[in-house]
Amino acid sequence: MSGPCESIHQRLRLAVLGVCCALGLAGCATQLAVGPDYEAPDAAAVLSADRWQAALPHDGTSRALLDWWQSFNDPVLDELLRQAEADSPTLAEAVARIDEARSALTASGASHWPQLGIEGHAMRNNGSADFPLPSPTTTRGVTVDAQWEIDLFGRVRRSTEAARARLASSEHGWHAARISLAAEVAGKYVGYRACQLTLRTIAADLGSREETARIVDLAAKGGISAPADAQLAKAGAADTAGFHAAQQAACLLTRKSLVTLTGLPEERLAQLLDARDGTGTQAQAAPPGLPVPAAFRVDSLPVALLAQRPDLAAAERQLAAASADVGVATANRYPRLALVGNLTRDRANIAGTDVLSKPWFFGPSLTLPLFAGGALAAQQDAAQARHAQAYARYRQAVRGAIEEVEGTLVNLEAARQRSQHARIASQGFRGYFKAAEQNWRAGGISLLALEDARRLATAAERNEIALQRDHILGWIALYKALGGGWQAVPSAPATPPAADTADAPDTRADGNEPPAAQDAGVTP
Image (tube, rainbow, N blue to C red):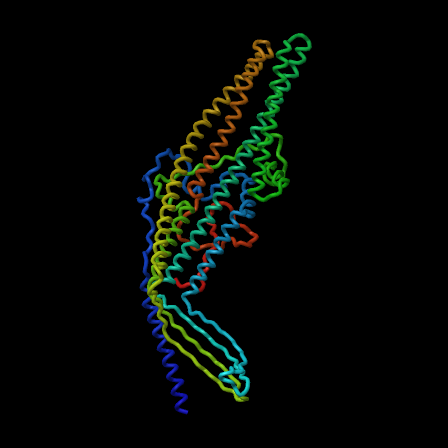
């Protein structure tokens, strides 16, 4: 009995020794990872200036950007934003990218652990002509294979590092898509309200022209006015009717754009847009005015933009992933050490006698890439080239963001000044038209002079509405250019929307998080 027991004890000692060696090697491996250790780009290296060159808005507070949509105080806009995010294909695609990146991270993390496999087999053998068996032999068995790669040079850890960076990039991309969607919906909504106001202005002008044409026509028939005046009045009314039809079409097209963005049926959207208070109550004859948002403060240092814009954070994480990929390609040129084991149990029936066989092996396996025709070196060079591409894309993204903010600031200030001047001009031309109309009725001026005064007043009023719209759109564009209140600050992630979740998150920039990384099975 001592023989079998001693053999079992020896096997156990060898197994324990092998496991201890594996753990020791794994502990040493955690201290070494070839390839570059990632460092975030220096802000001074990617920013072209240390201060904004355009004029900054002086009113508002920096905190206002976080809940800025609430400052519109417009329930209809709130509902449109909520509906758009609940049914946005763009956001659904962004969530799917997060799911893909999370799965890739889980798959990469699985390489840190031993891999086990089991195989069952059964066969019947009658030998061969050269080596015949006295009777057919039946063999049945089970084989268990195990392999555990000791990450000596950090190949697995660099792979996990890259996967984790890509997951973070996809989450930042979700934030960027969410902000862009909200800005687009709000812009279309403001455009629709401005279109309605312009339509009301044209409708009032058309009614006035038609009344003038009726009066002049009666006067011409009575011989009081010249027939040419009647023709002029009719032509002016017809021309304005054409403008009215074109404006109606423009409003309808804007509404259809909102249908595309929100996914609402057009009938439901029309009811919502016609509701003054957002509860379904029909609006009065005059359409609602333009929603006026609150102003907000812009940080005077462009470096703050690097932490405010999710698209820049996404580009930076892609750069980090490319850096880790260089480490993976570098580690592929180094030896790989793995612990492999095999345990087989076979039972064969030979001439009616059962024979049990229990072979096993356990030990290290070292793989050294001696010659691959330059493929491994080329793969490392390619990874370094991809890292250079990612860095160039990051620099270009930063420059584009700076240009976007600078351009938005310039347009916002110009729209503010032009809107003020347009308001003064509109008031003056309206007063001039009223005086001219009184003079015309009194016979003091000709119909041509009256129509000229009307044209100036109508054009000024339409221009005032357009510039008010542009001023509000400028604030929306600045909100988007500054990252919509998103902050790249580490925090405990909240429960995010999943790809198949019915309840969508709030559209406001309130710190809502995308799907959080689930690192189960991934070593930190």
